[in-house]
Amino acid sequence: MVEDEQIPTERQVHALPLFALAAVALVLDQVTKALALQTLTPGETTPVVDGVFHFTLQRNPGAAFGLFTDFPMAFTVLAFVISVGIIVSVRRVPDRLNALALGSVLGGALGNLVDRIARDPGLFRGHVVDFIDFRVWPVFNIADMAIVTGAGLLILASWRNERRERASS
Image 1 (cartoon, rainbow, N blue to C red):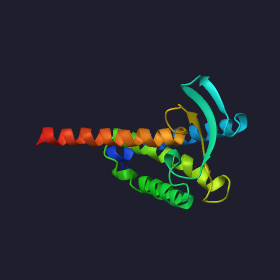
Image 2: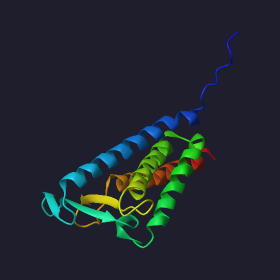
Image 3: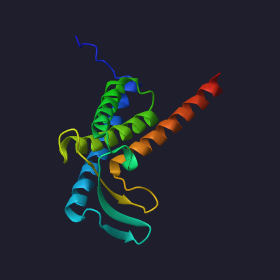
């Protein structure tokens, strides 16, 4: 007699793209930060497209865009709580778009969390490595891009789900 195999629900299937995207974002973020640290000089800018796109190595102790620099521990805790919250709620992700959105946020949060844990000036107070500079926006990194993209996708998913609910009622 064969035991009943538990077939994963549609929501459980969404864990794979969520964790896959999170892993890609995390690895891409950490690899590009390592390259930036090896090849760029802090504070100096290297133009890729002069006046439009540059690489500028900066260390950010605060939140996105250099805000709240006096509270690095708070952002470490926040990134940890967001990451755990996403991981714990993975079985309740309603669809693939939400899974991709949350995977992007998770990968970005983990990317910056690694910096806060492992980089100078010390454990849980580390400065995030930023290096992407479009000259009209504060310097940022791949993790920041992943977080912002994920937030945008969450807004899109919410809007799409709301439209579906209205259409079905």
